[in-house]
Length: 231
Image (tube, rainbow, N blue to C red; front, side, top):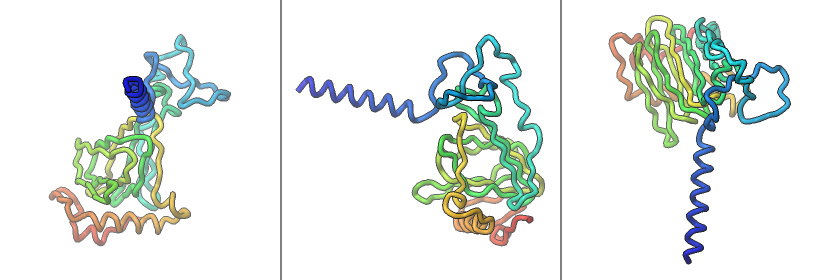
């Protein structure tokens, strides 16, 4: 009896340990591990090979990839630029990545998810309607002003929409060095911009009831029903 109980405890401990390992990026075993610039990778691991620690330099830990606004001259009027350890060497093994979102007037980032990370969404400029839907089909959305932060839980569908009178910019931090992006329409259908737009519009229209639009927001409920991105 005692032996069986001990085996059970050991088994559960191993399961819990493995679950913890699989639940997020693994911990780094040294202070830093910038991605090796080697062009040819002969060993494939969960992450990227490290540079020789003796060759680490300050520029490994700096990036300017988010200083310029993205191209919003597209169907949705939005740009999403995610910077991972593949582009920013210093992020390797730290379990982090960052992104910049630019939204022109009526710009929309359609429903998508990040299978390997939660996202902190910080509005730097403008007014943005942001939200996500959980596994019980409940929507959570808020109007965000400059300085506001919203969190998108890992793996849940979410969106952002410019609800102001000017361009909007937001920055994000992910708790994975490679969060991944899955678009709901792209995963189910062939690339069809009209289909993606209709699905996102219908989702937003169905769940917009609980949103409080401030006076500084260009949109209100009636205007949103007639919402059309500039093409």
